[in-house]
Image 1: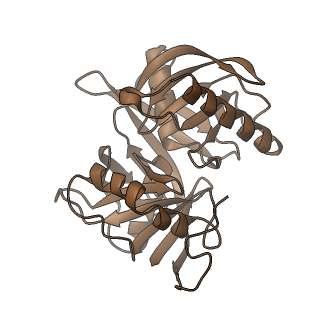
Image 2 (image 1 turned 60 degrees about the vertical axis):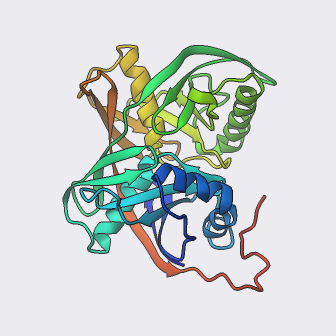
Length: 310
């Protein structure tokens, strides 16, 4: 399997160029669902130890159906396919430039949740115009064992998020184990209490929000991803969900800059505008760097051919 690795604000992306399973034909969302249901071993083999680690996100590169698009991409983590991934979109377009497949300028990528536009500003910096984002529920109160009442919003930014300012600890690196455990408990409480996204979709991301540590940023976050790892970047889809909440609360005007800081201190520059239907359309600007080009080998007699699963 030929892959190229990159990181966006510290969060890794593994672009799969060849060696992936055949997902058949049909809508990209249907093929992404097939990746999860029929090829779980591929997801874990490509991303988990000993060839990767649980924070890594995969980007399966496919030919586009729409001739106006540079490529189709299915994003996935060790658990399965993702609807959209902001950091991996930035990593993908920077890697395609590295390969000589695109130049600077604006490009379109097909994703399972729709076409997104990406403007490559320089060899390492890009702006993603994400899918329209929105808040489903405001001020939802959860009873979380060991934490009591936790209040937050449910919002969509390409994935489903529960966003809360009720942080169990300061958003510092030394508190990552405690933040992770608390976010897992919140996710379990969401499931136990029947709180879902639209059409019963699981809310599989939890985002803690606090004040920034740098003078330039507006806020700092910690994001728990579906597999249980934390996002090293500020999380593009999480930022999109946050922008939807800020817009609905009239706390941020269109085209006004918001700088979001991650748990490790990396930042995204965020703005939004409203489309003709009045929906919030986020723009996420960040920086990615290619870190490796490699061929992954999966020997039939390797006992960890499908990865090491916790």
